[in-house]
Amino acid sequence: MSRGAAPPGQPDSILVIKPSSLGDVVHTLPAVALVKRHWPRARLSWLINSEWAPLLESNPDVDEVIEFPRRQFRGVQGALRIAPWARTLRERTRADLVLDFQGLLRSALIAKVCRGERGRVVGLSDAREGARFVYDKIADVSGKQHAVDRYLTLVEALGVSVPSAEPLSWPLPTGTVPSAAVLPERFLLLHPFSRGAGKSLSDSGVTRFCAALAPTPVVLVGATERRAPALENVVDLLNRTTLHELIFALRRASFVVSVDSGPMHIASALGRQLVAIHTWSDPEKVGPYSRDAWIWQDGALFHRGGAARQAILDLSALGEFVREQV
Image (tube, rainbow, N blue to C red):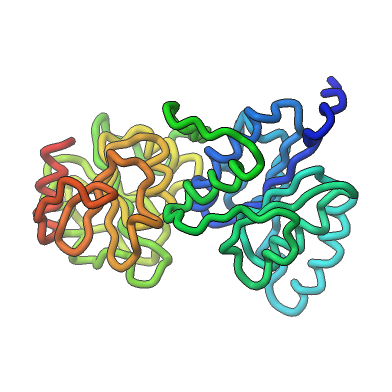
């Protein structure tokens, strides 16, 4: 069914460019939901890395998911594939409004390629690699710390209202039941490993934490070359879930403990009881957006903003604290 022409001054087509990472895609969901609410007649497309595309399945705000095959562009041969891919994308997408949430030169150039004849490209003031020189409009995000607030500022610059009294929308898939193991009736989910340098827990730390929770079941998830501890209360799902299965497990968990990572941000978006473990990263910028979530850093447990601090010096003590909450 035809949508009909958009009213004067309103976009008929919108392209969102936010290909990665997993956590950053989650951070962008509320801003995109507000854009779609503001311009419901516009066809909204989202350019995203293929591995994260399942995150947008059944999203009511996204009319089209355009996969960015980043892995195909690696190396010398990969570089030769970029130009033909960009030409194909241009033939497919001529947007009236392009929102570059990624803020890199590559994303800005893709935005320029996909902008319609009278279209606009909008980006963030802290975009890197000279990307801001491609933009037709720049959203000033100085003073904004958390990524979610920065992305909301971008859409505010378009005249889109960000309600202060309403909860933000985080449309995430329902997920699917993990096939590799049966989830316990009640369990804590632990995501202890991250690709970021220095963010993961040690093997001994994971063991101490899980042991402190016994007999409460602990479901381990994530991608790693390391092994789960051989404890009776541990259900090993390391390297054994799809993204949809991970989301299902996060929804089912009574409590989630995660290092600074994409799954932590999904847990926060889902409103799960959560402890986010931060080593060196700044929780004000990349911590859980929910103010109800706990943050554990430098032996202290607190909410974002530093409120309600408790001294919990090691992972065994953290495990005992969480066991009381589950």
